[in-house]
Image (cartoon, rainbow, N blue to C red):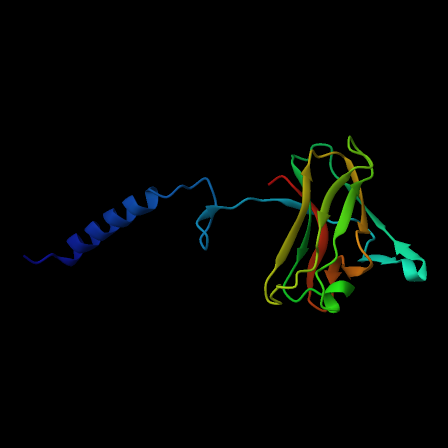
Amino acid sequence: MHLSLTTFLLISLTSLTSLTTALPTTTPFNLNLLTPKTTCTRLRPPSTPRLNLLNRPDLSLTTTQTLTFTLPPSAPGPCTLRAVFPPHWEIIDTRLQSGGEPLSVNVYAIDGPAAGALVGSVRFADKDRKEWAERVVVVNSFACRERMAYRFELAGVGEVGFVNGFDAGLGVEGGVEMVYGC
């Protein structure tokens, strides 16, 4: 039995139509992972081009750094404080550079219901990090507020630092950010 070209095209179009109508049309998909896309709002602290933390008791030098985020009153939660390091992002960690484990950074809430409390302890550097891979370090998630401020300080002796914001050499943004609405 031979099918005419018209019959063949009609059968093909009918099959294609039933296939495409089976796919959801309201939820965008990431074709690489086949998971629904989420749109998050990312917020960087203003006027903080670098995060530099120093704890050198031998030199009587200790620095901490406070980062403040101003969110819209209707920001949907939760708000997640994290650091994103794109591929090839340089993170200075003197303990790691001398062959030890990365330094821990303690993060304290400055305001809000947990003012003064330790809300996270993280290591920004990773001795097993691949230069070509992105690294995301989550500090903690919180209920969103219009103003959220955090103090970063080293838990050990040494220095940790990195560009916080736009890196002209790499042409991308990275560092500490607040993410909400995911």
